Length: 536
Image (cartoon, rainbow, N blue to C red; front, side, top):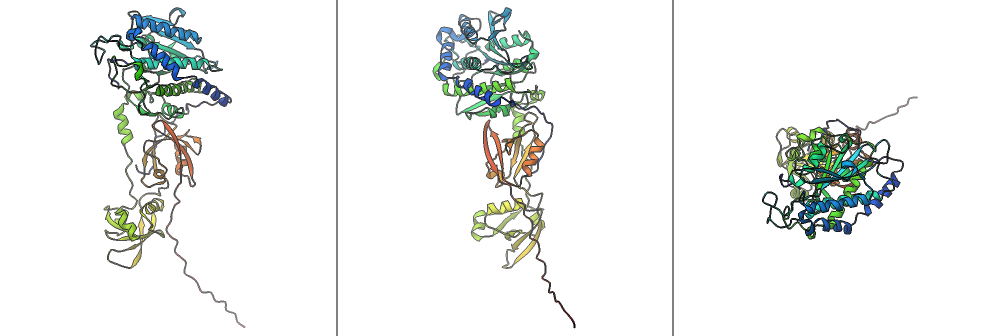
């Protein structure tokens, strides 16, 4: 990690429709066989192998892998041996794995050619910087200078994960459809020099590069939560994370785009990127960032998950392009959007004491909203609601749902505060019936999701466990291809409907039970006396 930059509603449906038809899913007649092949490759990513790589990279013998040092060159020899072992094609200078630049710095590059003649020219780049800060000095150490800074997490962890990717890819019976370029960057700690050099003087045509995955500090997973950067650089990347997340690693999707790691060199070339990050810690850029501090169980989970992400990117039929709007987004924009609530619609406009009303068996009005339907109809504090549209008051939750489900033109049975006599009162509820209690918003970075913008309390949506900012991705087992169509299907449901949604990158399922519309009782017709008279 580069030391020079610090790391980082109402119930109405309101949707701005601007849809992409490209969704990151694999659609192939051989999908089942391909997935079986993938499972075998993923299972090859083992804790013992990650430990072996990190132990070497973070050993005192490499003296902190400062760019251009003997320790850095020793690390480069080791990485090249691994690329040769698994048969990667060298794409550095003069058909070698090395691209030299600066003061004895060198990027290391190996290519896995794609298997699909129509897609092999497209490249997914996966990179991690292998340099660190050596013995540390006042400009790059946050601790005691002059001691070996082994950089086990920064960035032995990212390098070790990519080595596992290379081995896993070599075990696939058929190579991914797109080509994959594995890169180990040098001099990242000096200001992203390695990735800047390659993106300025690439050893392959940069137009071939469609996506970049950056692995930098992925060895300290805490509380099973990961930060993910770059998910808004192309449509569908957040959903891709969720759909491949078999280990349930929660994600915080961060909208900042800072020049603090090698992803930024690709962002400047308008290339979409994604980057996992297990957050800074007390050992960051200190001599204490050692092998024994790495959470290898979490490290392995992350490596397996991100290999699945890589495999999907390399195999999907179409890849959405760079989303320029991401350049104007940040965490402040995210907070503003995700905290915004649709204005609440109060259909009736009364409040009451739940315990008191339920003991009395009738809703005792405590307060009313001025100009509300209840106030306009003549209700006042102390009045009691006995029934709504023929449904007696049972408890507060049932009454609330009856208000949600009732047509605007409704009827109440009430008793005035100082009266023992009941009477009928016609009332015009505000808005239309609320059968689910959901509102959505659209987002052109997630066009194949319904993003929950508001959940009405005590509604079917709330009872099903949905929360604001959940992403609905399946409706009745069908993917959300059209935001408007899926929203219409969901809001128009009259029977229980299964949905699949993601929250913090973890996918769950739930059943929504829509309320049935309630109309006011139909007046009973007067009975008519019929006489049949006959005459002689």
